[in-house]
Amino acid sequence: MSVKIEQIYAREILNSRGKPTVEVEMTCTNGLTVAASVPSGTSTGKYEALEIYDGGSRYHGKGTRKAVENVNQILAPAVIGMDVTDQRKIDRRLIELDGTKQKSRLGGNAILGVSLAAARAGALALGLPLYRYLGGLGATRLPNVMSTVISGGAFSPSGLEFEDYLYVLDGFSSFHDQVEAISDMRALLQKRCAEKYGVVAEDGGALAPPMSSTEEAFETMLSVARQVGCEKHVFLGLDVAANELFDAQKSCYNMKSGCMKAERLIEYYQQLCRNYPLLYIEDAFHEDDWLHFSQLTSLLPEKQIVGDDLFATNDERLKMGIEKKAANTLLLKVNQIGTVSEALKTAAMAKNSRFEITASLRSGETNDTFQADLAVAVGAKQMKLGSPVRGERNGKYNRLMRIEDDLMSAVI
Image 1 (cartoon, rainbow, N blue to C red):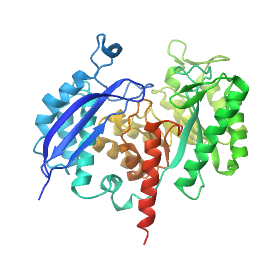
Image 2: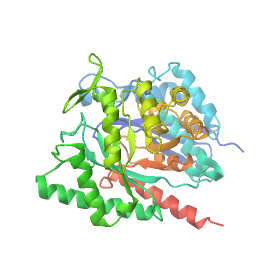
Image 3: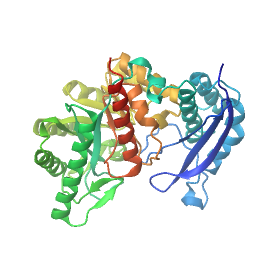
Image 4: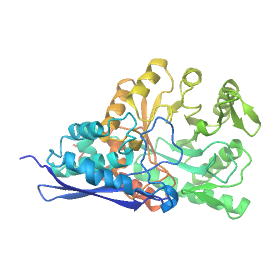
């Protein structure tokens, strides 16, 4: 007996940055009710699904009443009565209703809320954990922890050039051990920064100390890892967020040393890789610079060269990257593309082309843990979870620890 969607209701709620987003409640004919909420990014590329905001004076123009209205008045009537386990059919209907390439008519935030809720309801209808429902029997891989511990770039008060300075963990015996290690390192890093700089600002849980250079950030991070005793299993990562540095008129990147051409920036990345255990470089160039992404990938074949704004979790963009050999890792953000089915399709293309997958949260998170299950479902190598000091982040850490317990108890 199929379980059908009986009722949908959306409302405006707040995300972790105190800005409005969309929550969708879905009730099915078997009586179950689920809720899903939509994350939002601060640093966004031009190829992402577009969120609908109200404008005007409410919440400085960022109210989501229009998106909520689009769910309640347009999307809900169109999918009520559909089989809740037919995710692709539901998502296809949502996409058709919008009719635009980037979901700009009804809003990616409206469409994604319904898509997430349908997936969660489908899993419950079949009595499956969400990661198993989305990923099948092969969904057994826990992602390694990646955590932004130092913040820089355009949206940070630190003065550092690049947006995220990350710990990349690998080689631990369990996910639980990784959580303990990242928690210890983050706490010690905060203590070290306070001793050296005094009161240090935070940005979404990451520290924003007045450091002078990327090298200073890396040296401090590695010193902390050594003191905690896990330096053998700790690597470094950068989210350059090069879109924010790029000067289109001069065709160069605004660095502290001046406006740097892409060729010189490649040399700088190579230098950092020689001097530090830098494993992961995300958005090393602006989102249309396929040429230099390809060159960097060729020059650093053992490193993860990651496309975020470059791919926008879009299978068409990823296909171009595969053909051009631009990057070797997909950053997976479900709200970049706007439906669960499209995110899964892009992840499958990445795996089939031997790209690694890094799942990621957004800066404007909610307490919804959907993305933790999605990371396991697609077999992500890592997950950018953020520093484990905020509730919306720790909810995902905790969910992944529960999934690890589930998987261990099911071992034959």
